[in-house]
Length: 410
Image (cartoon, rainbow, N blue to C red; front, side, top):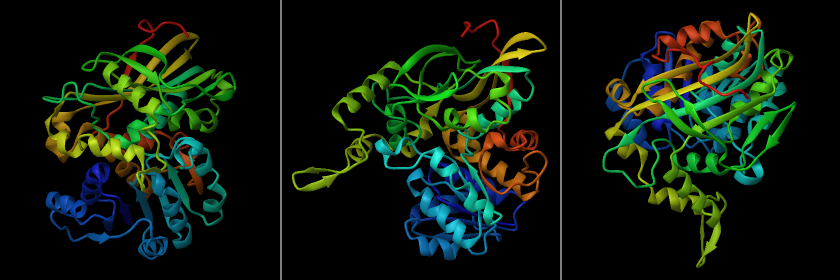
């Protein structure tokens, strides 16, 4: 099988290494527009015989169609603004597709969101192709855990994803920075969040419904806010049978410290989070690009980061008539991720799951009700057991915390 990875940024840097080391692929193509991005991966891997390298412009659809022609699976590790171009190239070249994220509401981002990309399902199905939407850590692993946990509960009244992180960089105290994409962090946190509640999707404000969530050690309790994210859009409609189990609410929450939140509020109030160009003294400038340019590059500071990334999915409901609040999660330390893959925990936790999913696909084990599907699907649609099992081989190990006695009733 030939797998083609498009995008060798922070996530692709990890994912490219993982794919190259896998025994499930006869050929791996690693591609990016930046020669330096390609060189960084080459410095880690050398030049294995089965790996080919390509410099390509993801905005050039004709070049993508030609590049994908003999690939079995394209993994799109670019920002969501490229998704449409890459998906259309896959349709034209007859290639299966995987990405790690979609976008927020188009009227605020200009990028289609999960609902629009899922609307492409018929086009993929008609060609016998599979589109795997949102397979990173969150979304991705969190959706798989939602399915895994829900299948083992008799009733599920609440599903909530919680993203916690104790990562910090010495010397960066008091500065506005993030250890993942600054552009995406600003966008996600300042979008009006979508939740699913009482049978319908609802848009609420930013930084709503704060709570102190009891993340397991070594992260511990952190303050979390509702954020616009893919899981709250897809899980209520695509996790098989979930509404029949009594689901009342689904949401996603980030742990965010007070200084970070306050800075984001100022950016939002000034309109500096906008992705749309404005005229500044005769020059067209994107406000958010200016902010990002002034922030530290995550790649330049992550090498000093310490702490843990801990992300999971909380399910509340009943098992055998007994009330349960179960948190399925993954934890990885920044130090260990840096030692193994030269990356931050954020990039490690997002980059390794697509490699695991690609292997499950290559083995013919990626199924829905035991059959290999065609069409576009979020990750909670698939039978979860083969995915959970193969994630272990990539050090994405599911753990379970019973929080029944530690969380207030909803």
